[in-house]
Structure formats: C-alpha cells, structure tokens
Length: 300
Image (cartoon, rainbow, N blue to C red):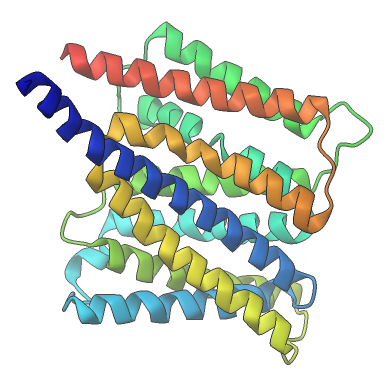
C-alpha cells in the first residue's frame, strides 16, 4: 500500500509536468504561426521590433511584480554576452525562415536543436558521449538532410535560414547552462526579447525596407504571438519544475506535431512521405539521446 501511494505521488507531478510541457509546445507553435501570419503584411525588421518590444515589456512587468532587478552585474557577464550573440542569430534567422519558408519544415528543422546541444556539450564542455549517442547524433543530422532535400528539385536555399536559426538557438541553450544562477527566468526572458529588438534594428539597417503603419490584423497577430510566447515560456519553466526532467523533456517534441498541423490547416502546406520520414528520424534520434543520457546519469 505504501509503495502504491509513493508511486501515485510520483506519477501525479509527472503527469502535470508533461501536460505543462505539451501546453508550452502548443503555445510556441502558435507563436510561430502568428509571427508567420504577421509576416504576410509587415517587413521582417518591423515584426522583430514590435514582437521584441511586446515581449520585453511583458517580462519586465513580470520581473517588477516579483521584485527582480532588471539590471545587475551578472547581466553583462561573458556568458551572457555570448548568449546574446547566439540569441540574436537564432531569433533573426528563425523569423526569416518563418516568413519565407513553410511553417511545417521550419518547425521540423528546429527539432534538431537538442541534438546539436548534446554535440556542443561534448565538443565545448567536455561531456562524455558514448558511441551510441554519437551514432544518434549523426542519424539525427541525416534526418535534417532528408527534410532539407539538398539534392532534390524542391530544395531551396531559403531552407538554410531555419538551419542557421536552429544553430543559434542551440548555442543559446548551451550558453544558458552556464548563465549566472542569480538571473531568473523573467530576467532571461526580458533580455531574450531585447535581443529580438536589436535583431530587428540590425536587419532593418541591412534590408532598408521602410516601416509601414501596421494594420489592426497585423497588430492582433503580433499581440497574440507575444501572449503565446510569454505563456509558453512560463509553462515550460512550470513543466521543468513540476515533473522529473527525464519524464517531461521528451514531450518537447510535441511541438513538431502542433507545427505541422498548423502549417497544413492554417497555411495549406503539403506534407509528403519524405518529410514524415525525416521528422521521424530527427525525433527518434533526439529521444534516444535523451534516454541514453538519463541512463548514463543513473549509473553515476
């Protein structure tokens, strides 16, 4: 009876954490869809500026409510500067990918980020990665190539925008692991969205597309994107703090399902067998890497 009670006590937080993770991934997918919708009317630089401003204000308000200082010495640390660069690259190129390429393929390529995080941890942090996980890493990269179709007639160089964005996010996640513990989720979120504003300014100077007066529908789409992004960020943190990481983390891949469904239903994108095979390989490799990593930690 005691064993059953303890199992139930463990199961309930894991179920709650998994549901929070699924909610977070659904909200992130909606954020992408609303950004893509806004991109039908507004230039990318303006989307970045307005989206970044809205998110920065939201996280500033949350930090103020929790009496968390926005400015501190740790904000300008070397790790945070590195994180800023990767965040800028990731956000800029991912929004460009959302604006110029199908939502479904962009979301699929993003799912390779955990694979590159493990690769980066092995190369730059000296983490031990056995031959099984190395095999899964290269298998996952093969899955990305299947989605990109570099030798097919349907290949577009624009697809590389999503790859660069994904690499930027991977570098940001690696830098976040070394970020000062004094910086809360709200503070990291605030500076993440400030980085989007900077990305908009940089791209605007390069692109020189004039800003336009946003329509009500474009502003609504961006406001919805900000709302979904802030909720997703909070739900993600809730998921990671409620359930066991090993149980909750695999549900990150539900974002792929949401992204593909939104692409098909909202933007009338087509999905073929090659796309599904590539997605399956990426997700399968990522899940195997997670499983092997958890198994290795349990031995120590």
